[in-house]
Length: 108
Image (tube, rainbow, N blue to C red; front, side):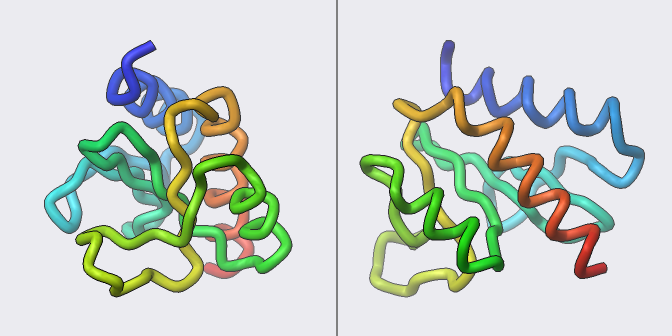
């Protein structure tokens, strides 16, 4: 599936199940918000970035081949607590989005 279409599908699924979840635009990117805070975003390069402040969850995501700490502008300014996951792992994206949502709700 096209990475953007997959992102939209994940966004729609989460929003249908949780009234706090919405699709939005932040930092010039399509994103998923929960309670007005960004929990995931789509990159035009066909990746998704997830806010995973829990170190264990972040390490699991980083263990996926090609994943990296999120650098939105590719200029060395990393976003702490965020992991960018390539489309080759799109099967993991819904689980990562659920984790980002769960952690956001726990820390709200």
